Image (cartoon, helix red, strand yellow):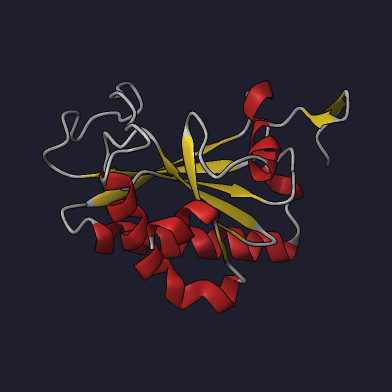
Length: 170
């Protein structure tokens, strides 16, 4: 199901992100493939927080093709493992599968790393945020390089294409 167009532009937040810069108000794009797009969330209250969205546009998780579904959930598993390797203090990776808000009507999963020292452990994790990291914060390059190292072995399996921002950090 394609997103509706308004004056030639998509009305889907995630589809619009695919066509814009690698960095937006909320995300820093790490990598894309024919089936997924992966972002580091700018809210790093929970270090290593990622957002994985399907490609192309689907309005509901039940609309995913077999190939997109295999890549989407395969990459979800890879991302969970990557988070734990990049941040060894992580005990659990919580997931929030979203996509019902008209602005974000596109299946996407928030991967929320949890550890005993996060201020809400073991409580609910979506009711607090810290200020986003500034673009010039050196932690971005460190985080991007660490995730690149963990995701690179899966480059051929998922036909991953590294974003310009990821290449810049390397």
